[in-house]
Image (cartoon, rainbow, N blue to C red; front, side, top):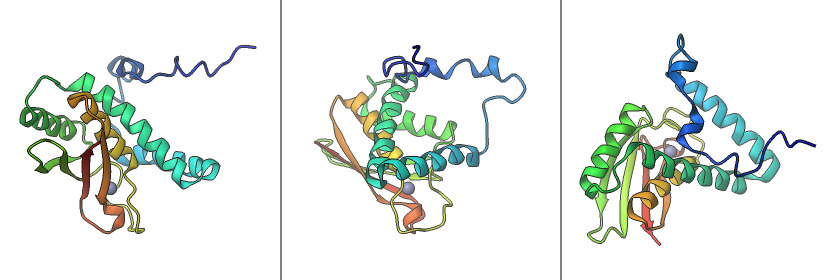
Length: 176
Ligand SMILES: [Zn+2]
């Protein structure tokens, strides 16, 4: 029997998998409302939480975010740049793609800890407050970006979130 879903290897994410959007969507183009992105995200969260529980669902989102962060860095960023230039370029591309508005609030001299904020966050800005930090995907995304840039593993934890009543998402990135 043919496995129509293919192997995990066939499903490995890469930028090329996203296809030629200009060619494929000549009329509608490559922009779409944030609510469409959130529609996919929140329906997926419901299914994953129902099947596997909240903890595993969050971990899946974080793991997926890390894969995206690695591929995003390969596609859009120069990993030979200085930290300052790298973060400036990251700010620019996150703004251009409407993912969020990045600010690097604090960097330890040895890069052991970095505090990053995202305003206008794609995943959570504007959500009704529900006493939750919900940006697991962003945590993973930043881990993937930092891993690809530094070669070091960081543990990224969201410490402020719109969904927890703040007006900005703040992430503590600790080298492990
Ligand atoms: Zn958040």
